[in-house]
Length: 421
Image (cartoon, rainbow, N blue to C red; front, side, top):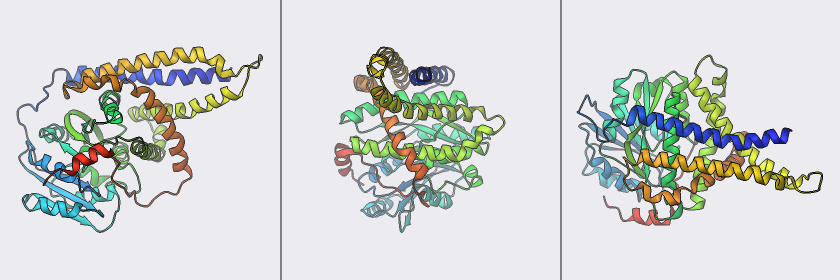
């Protein structure tokens, strides 16, 4: 009986989550996106902003990032490029860029202290009340700040708002699959979380903050490997609201090799579990139901990640009265569940591409590759959690979350080498 209950839970979790994500994303679109223009409306107050770009070994990408900021449709902004102990030619490239950009300031940290420490250095050096932070391998859409900043100026309790990243390197199968992931999984989940009333993470690739809020919570934690997840929960724990703005676009390089994807997702898994552990006491607080729902969703994902391989191993080893491995008896009901999850996943991709299509006209041509991602997503999610969670529980915790440039694959790396200054 207990095994049958566990099998039911194993089948029910992805079905429940997929259905919730689809419903929430469509509701978000219907309420907040459907009637809104893609380009910013008539100009309102646009206060001066500081754009902070943390850099570590970004010699071949930082030029395009800074040049994307030259085209911003925003009246007053400064750029703070924080070189966090780079060992390549990043600093030299930044100095060349600064010669023709008086609004570009370079902050040179002598050794690698981690992305959070680099961002904190930029926050301390900033002269503006509103901050936009972006990765050094991304390119910001000219209208992105005009979409992000009104969330911070128009509502007293909003501390952070994250944008909508689009995968830039699509020369490999993994790159093409991730186009679907960002539009039909990450974008869909963020919309669902906003309907619930919170966010699991303000994506560090493009995010805007109210500086006052960051100072109140003691800035970013430097001992986390996923500083964006950590600061999201610190802000929400302190009573601030965070938002998702899908019209604030940026293009970002993603890993397009198996090794690079594994390392990135392992970092996400370890960092996410670490942050959840730090804030799990929210479950005992009065109210705060949006955060409790998000924590429950995370708990279901972790449960599934451990339950699936455990039941598979048990089913192969245990036998029924006739001596047949139990897993043979499970094939039929599990197969039907796979078809149901696959159908819901396709529906999720259809909803995601339909909603995201207004921001990326050609996203649909990657649908064939993207439709395989749900199976890769659940399998990869299980694998990284199985490996990552014990590392967090039993490994030595770092004082500083030092970082390294992600593996962006051979094709994207060679493409960025040719960028000028």
